[in-house]
Amino acid sequence: MTTFADLGLSQKVLSAVTDAGYTIPTPIQAGAIPPALQRRDICGIAQTGTGKTASFVLPMLTLLEKGRARARMPRTLILEPTRELAAQVAENFEKYGKNHKLNIALLIGGVSFEEQDRKLERGADVLICTPGRLLDHCERGKLLMTGVEIFVIDEADRMLDMGFIPDIERIAKMIPFTRQTLFFSATMPPEIQKLADRFLQNPERVEVAPPSSTAKTVTQRLVAANKKDYEKRAALRDLIRAEEGELKNAIIFCNRKKDVADLFRSLERHGFSVGALHGDMDQRSRTNMLAGFKDNQITLLVASDVAARGLDIPDVSHVFNFDVPIHAEDYVHRIGRTGRAGRSGKAFTLVTKADTKYLDAIEKLIGQSIEWMSGDLSALPASEESQDEPRSRGRDKDRDRRKGGRKAEPRRAEAAPVIEEIEVQTEVREPRRSENRPAPQPRNERPRSRDNDRPRPANDDQQRRRNHYRDHDDGPTPVGFGDDIPAFMLIVANAKA
Image (cartoon, rainbow, N blue to C red):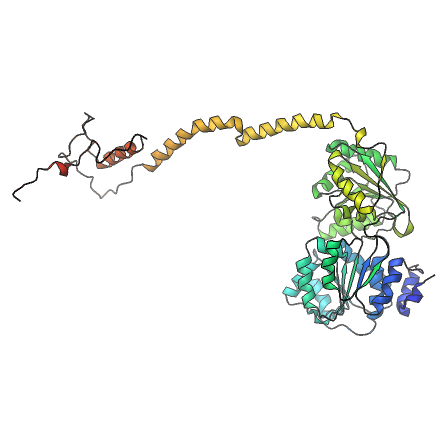
């Protein structure tokens, strides 16, 4: 049987691994560490909870024993998609590198730049960061990446799928082409693999499990639930109470941050020991919440997918999917929080009738059907959809009426002429006349209109306003001069002149 001593690691690293209580490497570690020590590029694929982090931490510690970092020129770079994963990798370096005198810099959001700058000025042997904060430091002129020897992209599929592709490309151009690049991920779909190949040169592919497979130590069950929030929350509470005898702690996953907050408040009102974790929380709150969960101060942790990737909480007994994940790969990562390191675990997923397409995608991805608990969706009341539909239609009608729907159209049509009249009156408002400007005198020589016996207004402004109204009476357009003939046309011409 292969041991860590057979992998070529240094004596300092072996001593730290032994002190941590490990003697036999996992399959991904046994397959990735030897080629990594040979400076080869690696694409490692293994299901979550199999020790991928140690697969690049241990060989990096051995390779970093030779050499020394210079100020603002890190020797190695590790990119992580979330702050929690970056902090977790830093903890692994501290645990396994306790016999090394290495400077480790952690660059993540939510921490002041000044503190991070002081670490960079001392020289960083290991730089662990998220892409955004790394680029911020580079743009501030605080980093020079030409000394990077090893480039690690952890959770590669998540990094590329979350929109970090442009950032990673920018970072890769800053690093020497002769670098060693390591990719590690739990899932590697074909489209993501094509993108990953752009960063690897003749890689050693280490695949110890089928892509997107789930651990056999995790018992998976589906629970039919109504789509109404209060009924769904009640079903979750009943499920938690039913598992109370075996439940030590659990992570409850929601798709949206708002649902995390709502579910957290609901469970807290019902007397559960519960905490919340999502991306909008500040870094100190997220760190304290994770620490409280790891120390068993909190039994239930309601979280978004920020807690689904790579978090090393070794003894989680249960995972509850309050929402079926939209992306099938996220299901693999979620339930991978339990059943780690050979332990047994349970994963329950609440499924509504609207989640069937997401469930089909999950079962297709993992290559197996998940067993239902206490009946499938057909066991739900048939009146669920019919009760919601009339109410939603009523709301739609009220919304249409408020926004000007079909019933509002006649009222809007009647109001149109009034609006038009107001606009006309606004346009012909009498202009202000200067006090020093004399009023125009009436012209008595102008003839009266043939079709109107009333005398002409003495003011020219009133005459122009009257003509303006006449032009807007929507009547037939007069031909020539119409009924009004200008006065100069009536002057008799002198033939002798």
